[in-house]
Image (cartoon, rainbow, N blue to C red):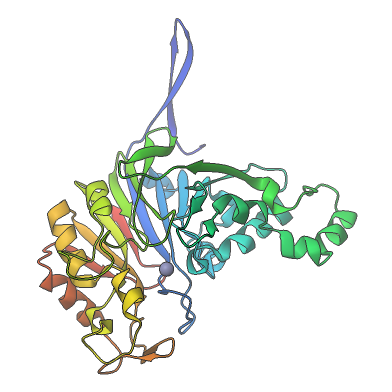
Length: 349
Ligand SMILES: [Zn+2]
């Protein structure tokens, strides 16, 4: 916090410190824009870095990572925010395309930051599925280093450097679980930055987040979709995300292009199509919510890809205009950002 202008006030009751920012700013960087488990031209898996601070330090006092797909460590390094600088990590849901980078990130902190501080991991409490399984962020966190413990690597490295934590990277996680519901609740805060969460539909335990700062606000929808799992329904988007996003400056949301729908010839499984939000419906939602910026991420299909996994894209690869036009069809008149890795938006602009 050395770049902050700190105003310290002594009061009768004790010592209070508040941080006054000369030029507060919010920065939102897409650390990975790949939609789902496929890999395409080196795109990183889903993730968004949200930073708040002062213009003088490029908005980097508070560094929050939302989802940790494949390659998050590398993208954070390119965004000049190494894993060790994150104060908190938030997960939307227990799908590997949003979580598989976490082991890499925590292993890196264990190597070079075993002395701390711990990183807050904020995510849903255990969420049972009607199918009988349980989605458990707590177990993901508790077992994050298990493969390397089982391989013997951790014992070998501890033998040569006893300053590392003996329990492995799980010991560096400060787990903060919450019960997502249809009403936003505060799940994390630091100074004037507050993160709230709402339960949303995709898989059990899915949550969407909102970050409010003095420089603006951003909603991370994740893979949220509508409570009604397939048509007929008024929209593919989430009523909960819309509630959370009302009055927000920026919405970051996973996106599927209508070309993947069952009316076309991709063969893409309809249930997977229906549980995502379409670009057109996101445009309508962003308009209703009054957002100024809509950042499309987790693009299904990726820009230019001829296939999504095994499914061919009707008409060949999609362009940025194809995604923008789909959003405009929904009536949105604000700024549309078709995400690629490391695309960033800063407020004030
Ligand atoms: Zn996903």
